[in-house]
Image (cartoon, rainbow, N blue to C red; front, side, top):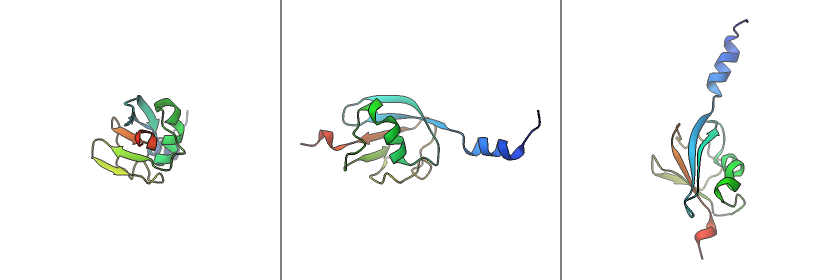
Length: 99
């Protein structure tokens, strides 16, 4: 088999990492969700919303990186830009808990 350095570099650059997802309102978790650094938080939400019981179309979504304590409502922020690392917990809240 021939070694293709460009292919190997792409595999390393595009390798996924696993994070835990948490519905901050209900406490529902989804362990070891596979994401890429280039994924937006909105893409992660859309992919796993049903698994953790969050409405991906809610206008009041809040993402929190539990390790750093930072939060954002910007669904266009990337996993890498939000400083998520393998093993981190991404807590997501929607407006469901607000009366």
